[in-house]
Amino acid sequence: MESKKYLLQEKDIPTAWYNIVADMKNKPLPPLDPKTKKPIKAEDLYPIFAKGLVDQELNETDAWIEIPEEVRDMYKIWRPTPLVRAYGLEKALDTPAHIYFKNESVSPVGSHKLNSAIPQAYFCKQEGVTNVTTETGAGQWGTSMALAAKHFGMELAVYMVKVSYHQKPYRRSMMQTFGAEVIASPSMSTRAGRDIITKYPNYQGSLGTAISEAVELARQTPNCKYVLGSTMNHVMLHQTVIGLEAEKQMEMAGEYPDVVIACFGGGSNFSGIAFPFLRHKLTEGKDIRIVAAEPASCPKLTRGQFQYDFGDEAGYTPLFPMYTLGHNFLPANIHAGGLRYHGAGSIVSQLKKDGLMDAVDVQQLETFNAATLFARSEGIIPAPESSHAIAAAIREAEQAKLEGKQRTILFNLSGHGLIDMAAYDRYLAGDLTNYEMTDEDVAKNLAQIEQIL
Ligand SMILES: *Cc1c(COP(=O)(O)O)cnc(C)c1O
Image (cartoon, rainbow, N blue to C red; front, top):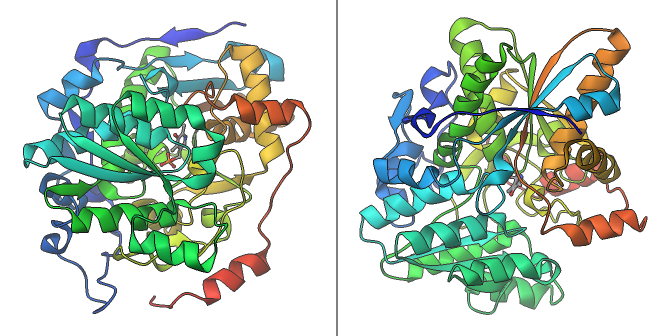
């Protein structure tokens, strides 16, 4: 094992987030009110989201948005995160490529999600909110939000997708340790939950259903706001601290990436590492490839359709423009729980539509092969989600070898896998299988959705 770290100092933590929308020629289409099909206004979102966050969500003009001092102070607990040259992995692959990764797994919760949980809690607190509610799939977001809510003195209720609630008991206990209340979703505590349990008594839950439950609770509880861990513009904004640091660190290394890669659930860690580099492409015409790596079992960017769809299963959210598999999509039970979501965020969807980025899909077994090679050559056990990025980076490195060309690859290690060892156990025992969605599955799902575009 051999690697080299590029470290920044506390003073190098960015002082502003990068708002890519300001630099996009084609802005994302506006979210629509599902009843009137008219663009929603900020006032429509204020009952559910903190005002400060809504204003960030709809900001199309300011490329830089200042990071509040209290948020930067919290970032100092683990930021700046290291950029690592993965010599061990390069050697194992015998590739001429230079591979770098940004290590977001060093946060107190083990993933990048805290980068947005802290500002979301901060802006809620600013407005006198006392209770926050959210959903979580694999538990990474819920854990981040539990820590952030506790820090700012608010109560948090988390709807956790039922299958994860049972498969990942330690993520549940992490949330409870930070003081959050955790409810398995679907639950009987909301109308959305009761409706789906009545229809499908054995339903093991999905992020879409958990979002419906959390939004319903926020609407019905005074002084309670809803927060979420991916897809929306303000979440992408907060995550840009990843790429802004990586930009400086690549300079320290004296290199510039030919390709930037991240795994893709709703797009937050992808946007975080990619947008600051995409900025060079948008504003200076720089030649750089940006690649999102998604599971073959949940391929919204590679095989979904660009159209308006709901963010949740029950249809409580506004309609967002997105690449989607349909909000009624029930994803296969792969171990990368954080990637099991039907749609992509609006900004990323527009960038994909405009050909400014690429997407690839990866089968479950390939991701675990990549994860194991990475663990053995770099000494870090990656999250099953992050392993999609590693697998895509390995493909690039192998291609470089075939072509006999140097290529500089940067990927985001969005989290570690130390609480996902049950998944590794299954892999090591030879019990894991691949799941792929057929084009017919995708078409069948999408046929049930109202066509608005
Ligand atoms: C949640 C999560 C993801 C997927 O979410 P994005 O918003 O697409 O980044 C990826 N990796 C880890 C470790 C996660 O916790």
